[in-house]
Length: 156
Image 1 (tube, rainbow, N blue to C red):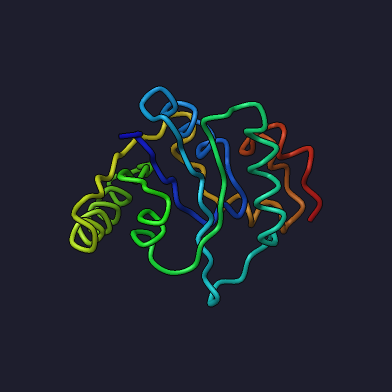
Image 2: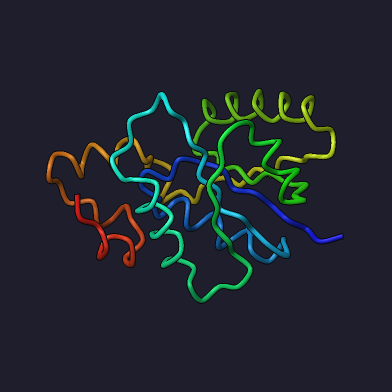
């Protein structure tokens, strides 16, 4: 059986912290699917097409990373992709409490799913997509918080 992990999120935008987690997780999995969950109630800065393009370009030379988008429950998406692992990043104790609850709910929904937590590297633990979006919206310098390839592509 292949070890397939789904790394779900909105990735609006994908940050250097997200990128670091995927890169560090690569040795553990045969494939990682960076999956953009679609929420019709959420207002995004970047379109779904832009975010998918960011993911394509970021891992264009890494065959073990795929990207996709989905609607509905993450556990249902995992079933369609034959993934038994969810990859999640933890930046703080508050993140852990939230993610622990989600992991337990996901396990109830699909007992075959295991959530694998990666602690954020200390230099990235303060970075969130929400904060980076605010910096971008206010014409701030966000390059330190984004993978270089992505910063070059951004047009807000």
